[in-house]
Length: 80
Image (cartoon, rainbow, N blue to C red; front, side, top):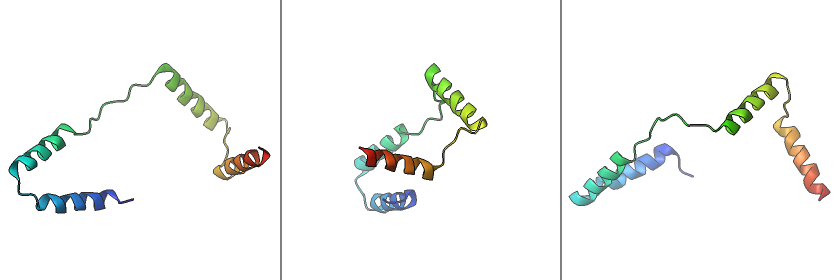
């Protein structure tokens, strides 16, 4: 998968070859209308509760390493 910089540079290279003014205007309008909003994401009560429970698990040390989780998954899969 291409990196963001590679994608951006490829697009710039392609844009430099376009001479159709209407096409460029349409692309410009598309880019202007698709700006990223920095709106705050509204969470539901359930999502907030889950995050609070996750914080509490972290505070009380109720954690599992990725390696332990992978081993548990492998055991479960082999038991099927």
